[in-house]
Structures are given as structure tokens and as C-alpha cells.
Image: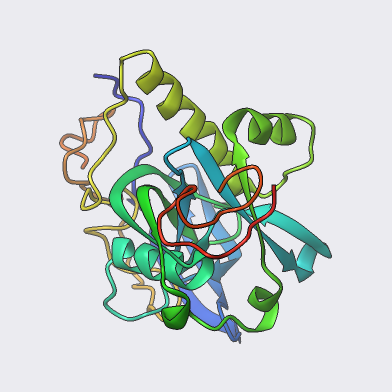
Length: 266
């Protein structure tokens, strides 16, 4: 087994203050020392974390959702995703909730595709990406009423090859969507070859999050004079730290996920 893995590490932090408190995330300024450099000061986005869902139907197509993103002034094709902003909610439960709210879908089969730091140079945000299969549409009477940017959602079922081409040609630029497309391609190709990938269970620990003090939004960063190296459950030793731990026409009833009367884009 490869020992290639990230190493959780908390330096000696001499100061931490919230300099901006926003509606969704905060900006925190921290002073800290590293063995290789001292007196460092960095502003960071203190984020709740998030989940994303790669949705694959029984025809091995992916569901993409188009949403307006104001910071880049564009309508981007993405996978369903959402913030971990409900206190005490397990990430997989958050993913299931987001799938219902954003895509009118439930899934029987859930697996972990990846854990990611999205912009670690400036944000504490981590995202767990799930693979959701064995889909059923939520009955129309029970569907979530979307508002704000989500009211303008467009849906499209695409083959993985079409999605890969869109990534390679710069037509799909959302990083989580790109990661989901690449991961799904890996999984489906391996399954088609009779050598399925061993994906992690939904209760697998998040290596940079679980078992560590919270340092996201709303957390008080602990100031200390000595750095700490964290143990991540189930991980192999690294270095000198031991035990570190819908169809091309439209999704309708009987075509793609079951129970749909919604027409999605080709």
C-alpha cells in the first residue's frame, strides 16, 4: 500500500481573530510559526465545509445542474452540492438532503469518491464527494421549492464521454464537476473491465477533518506555543509520524431514475 498521503499538522498559533463575519463564511486572520518560517500572518476563509454528489443513472449517464455563480458572472454546469451548515448533521445525510432539494432525487447506493481541499491557500473548505446510484425521483407533490439562484436550475443528463470532452475543451469549468466526471469515468471503466474500484464506505473518516479540533466557520482557533501532528484513523505511517492517522431526450417515468415526470435537457 502506498504511503503517499497528506499530513495533518497544526502549527503554533499565536493569534486568531475574525476580521469579517459574512452570511455564509467568515474571514479570520491568524499569526503562526512553522519550523521553516516564523512570524507568518494569513487571512483565511473560515468555511463550514461541503458535500458534492456525482449522480449516475442506470444508463451510466451523469446528472449535471446549471446554476448562476455571481463571483465568476457565469452559469456553470455543476454536480449537486451543498454546505455542511446544519449543526450535527452527518455529511452523508447532508448529501442525501441536497440530492432531494437540488435534483428531486433519492439514491439507494452511496459510496465515497474523494475528499478534497478546494482552495487550501486561502480557505479551510473541505468537500466530500459521493457517488450516488440506484436513483428514484421524488414525487412532484413532495419536491423542495427552490428559490434564489436555485430557482433558475437547468438539468442535463450526459454520457461520461460527453462530459470528459466538455472538461478537456474548457466548456465545463467547475472544479468539483470536473473532479466528479474524472472519478466517475475511472469507476465505470474499471467496472466495465470487470475490475471494480474499491470505493470507501460513507462512514469512512475524512482525513483532514474527523478527529481534529474544528477550525472552520464558528470555531475558536486554539492558540498554542507548540505545534501538533494529528493522527488520522486508518491511515498508514508517513515520514516520522507513526500511525497517522435522464436520457438524451428527457427524464420521464420509466426512463432513467424511476418515478419521474420531469423533462430534463438532452
